[in-house]
Image (cartoon, rainbow, N blue to C red; front, side, top):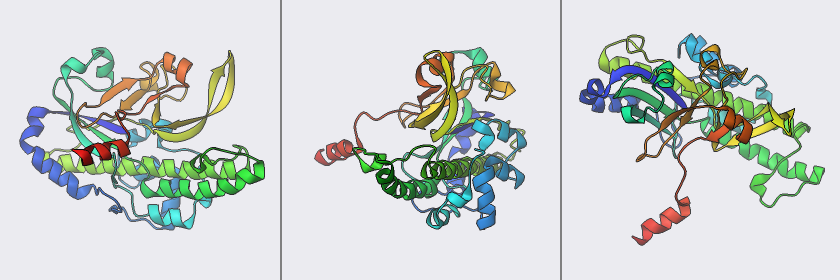
Amino acid sequence: MKILRTNLTIKDVQPRLKALVDHLFKTVPAGVGCKGFVKVDNQQFDAVMTDGVKWCVDHGYGWKEDIQKCESKGKIDWADPSKVSDKARKRGIDQLGTLGSGNHYLEIQVVKQENIHDPVLAKKFGITEDGQIVVMIHCGSRGFGHQLATDYLRTFEVAMRKYNIKVPDKELSCAPFHSNEGQDYYKAMACAANMAFANRQVILHRVREAFSHIFQRTPEEMEMHLIYDVAHNVAKVEEHRIDGKKKQLVVHRKGSTRAFPPGHPELIPLYQETGQPVILGGSMETGSALLVGTQKAMDETFGSTAHGSGRTMSRTAAKKMILLM
């Protein structure tokens, strides 16, 4: 998830909204199998997998300040492209700057004054007035990460026999964290996370270009500053307190997002006092929220919270209901 603010209001944007949305549709490819405008070779893709947002900024797709406003500064250090299959590489190499399909979205949003519950905190994030325009991006590493997961599920099926591990569903296939198989996947998964950081960054760049094209002002003049970028499908080794003792744990956030409190050492100085910005994506009906990490989250849920609105029913149940109508 990624969210950036602007100094525009709904009054500024409404008259040109159709032109803006049309331009975004043209410049940010969406849908299954779509390809991005950023063309990289295998060596450059290695750099994307290891450097994430930094690679984008170094190549003109962003501002230096963007790096600081990403989880882990937009780069997971232990990524190792040698742990990525050729098939996964081929699926990901031409998808930089693409939105994909499913529940991924690029949304122009409007701040409602009645929904600002802490004006002082909101102001520190750059949210200052009723009707202010922000942009939220929800997408990941596209088919690249999916292929990596598929590859390692097969690897783990073999590994489980080796380590005498049994699970009720093959989708839960696993390996001991410190095993060769476990570490290979951990390093490959970091490559997918870095590609996802880079993908959202390229889309952010396209959003700034689109606003600039439509409103004939620079992104700097429109104060199109990133508030935060955070993953919600990643595993990391983190330090947490268990039974009063600090321990190193593998925290796997799937369908959840990080919510670190004020003072956490991983947060940049800007957010040391406030706590980490937390992006909670809404449905098409309910709107989204910008929250903040708290010590309670750290104590009760390993510094985690929901990453978005849930479902009232499964996809299968929804399809059946519609077919019966």
